[in-house]
Length: 81
Image (cartoon, rainbow, N blue to C red):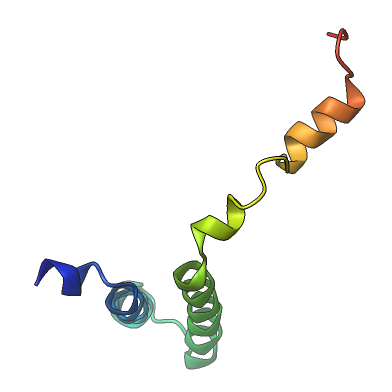
């Protein structure tokens, strides 16, 4: 049962349902339906992106630096403050 609750599909559906409940039932005053649909589309796209992200793809090239580190290395070469 623990594997079921930690599966990405179940967590994605749970996130979408809880976001819908928050937008339609908890937020007061109620949001217009067009805003709820817009927010749900944005959340659905974000959930799909997070659920399909593979950490191994990000770690495939150890030589690639995050942009802030790359910029810092380019702006301040070795020996500079």
